[in-house]
Length: 387
Image 1 (cartoon, one colour):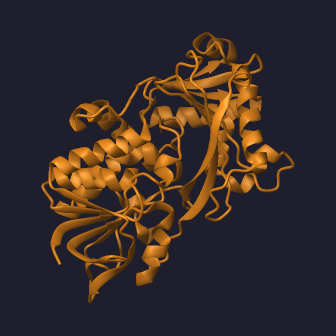
Image 2 (cartoon, rainbow, N blue to C red):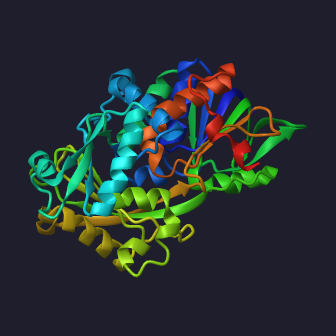
């Protein structure tokens, strides 16, 4: 069986990014995908490259490093990833949210993010579609958006032009080990060998890691979204709401609420794509691997977004869908080496940050695998924090 310098397991946005940057380092790379590229979380999400939702510290530091890469990534890939540095806004409805976002924003500013807090009147001057009851917002020029599937395709096409091979419909079922070293992988269609192997399978990563006795605390968290018809531009920026931040970082506060939308973890995520279509999200639900949409979930998403942007009431939905975000207990992804197994690496558990983090994740994981060093400190994201 042919051997490789590196094997990447998982053809989503993290896996294809890693395969691309490995190929840039001239590693002979094999990308294994159980189904089709981008068929998991990467194909069922929005395209936010947003800094404002990242907590100060390792989260924000990673996001800022990634945003710098995004500025030239389309040219580097020679592929239109539909990147727009459009800016972003987090909408605030209540005085309690205003106070919380003021504290959050001040910490972000201290960490180096260009962000400011504005009142409702100023927010409506920037975004006239906002409802009259909005009392404020935070805004940043460093936020943006991309098309996730075009990004997956861009990474893939560029890597194929270098030294990468792809094997679709190859499900990885285990690792080949010799002592405490991983030397390859087992798939449903045969074995493949490499000195370096990385698991980038998102919500499926725990199943694979369990084959070698590694417990990876990643859980699927469902997000239900609405795709609406193309219309004349109604918003200029990507938008979140302050409740989105609470749902992301404090799910324990949502479970016993009497408000159905809060209990479902609904927080507005709104973007208008290049073709005029809108993506409206999203719920945050722990329902196992159930990717079905629900009437209650979609209704709550629609009502919550329309309350803040009333023009949405006049726009027709064309489809609804759901994706599974890989959630971790402390909100940080797992990126780095796997304890006890030389040559094995993992990059999984990004939850809603996979889009924003993809370039920097691919770059630093490729650096780590091929040189042993990284340009960003990965200690906060190590597996050892749970082992």
